[in-house]
Image (cartoon, rainbow, N blue to C red; front, side, top):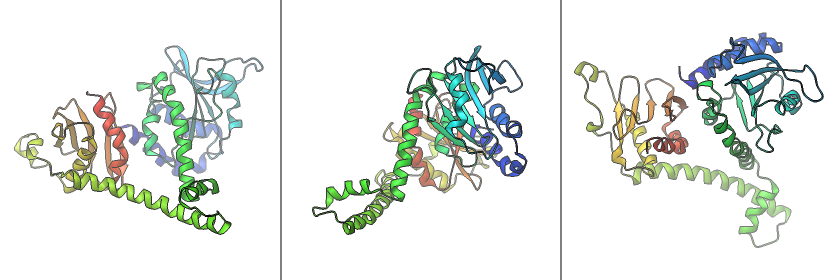
Length: 354
């Protein structure tokens, strides 16, 4: 199974067992240890790699323990503090993590209740754990956009410098996205006043402010809708995209070739991919290869340069994106337009081969 599938398998267990997760220990055994072991690949049965009840004396505390320490190359990499399932995570729960952070080599700390994971580093001040997590991840409300960041915690690809270097941007990105979402839902007076001052020359009376509150809210939603529609038009109309050329599909033995059926949705998905990548490479270099398992898209018709895969053969469709090591992460999509949400990742994939 690929990374997202392993996450989904664990997430589907939660409704089945949540009534039995009445203690911290039950949460550890049923959710946290499987997440570390099955999803991230840390060997929970190796006490030199995953240390339970990790102890490190601090200045004011002796013999205090943190639930887990993950080790690599003989050094502490991640500290983990656990709470029972369903318990609301607060900064008070991270007190031990704050103390341990300054007396170990750890650059990452995780606070979790088995479902929600809050991940901290020291982006604000060296060797001092930030008060706010740079990444939040919830198994019961999975945000597909942050899956690549969660995967960086996996043992097989773990690189502390890469994680920490992107932590600052992730922290502020998530906060800004939250603020923007709140303004779309219910614009604040200061936000409304900004637009009103640029478009209205009269006095901003209470009545005018209310009018501009409603107008601003409508304008934001229309802007979002227009932006999406414009991207679709640009991709499907202006680029004069065509169906997959027959030459793009490799020859196979006759009996295998007859089993491969290229659907209209796969062709349309391929066209959308080309529309995105035309900003980066010549379209003649973006080649399709359909197989029984998935619809593959390659750079330069080279199997060693996979760009993405379309998994459209089941009811749930997935866009498969690949990292520098060609590990695939599947992202569920409900319609083809959602492929545009992954434009940046698709263009970054080209950089692996250039």
